[in-house]
Length: 142
Image (spheres, rainbow, N blue to C red):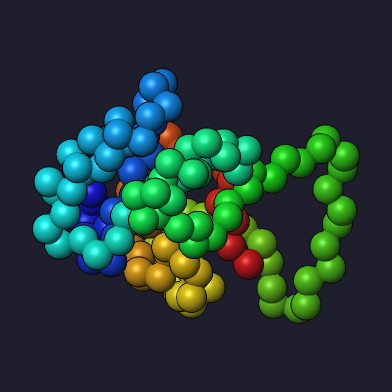
């Protein structure tokens, strides 16, 4: 429940799981989460697409599928060369320099993506890029 979630009034829970597959256990977990509901309108939980049992339990708690996410894997074939128009380049993101441009592109591109409509701030981008979740050299800007 960070500053970004609070601004968007949406909270994401990464762990909402019980090894006991019983709707009452999930209801108890939900009741515990709702103790912290002040300031939030929506709750998001990521569930593997193949976990039909959990999807069924959560639908009984009034959760519904809003969008699907997938992990993309790249094979090790060579990267094709790119012919860019004159005065264009692809460069690595530079901390302390590129946060505003990153926000402009990200916020316009994600403005209508369910669960990601809340704009990011330059400070949030800087924190995100410094976290262990981003690959070194993996953030590029055109």
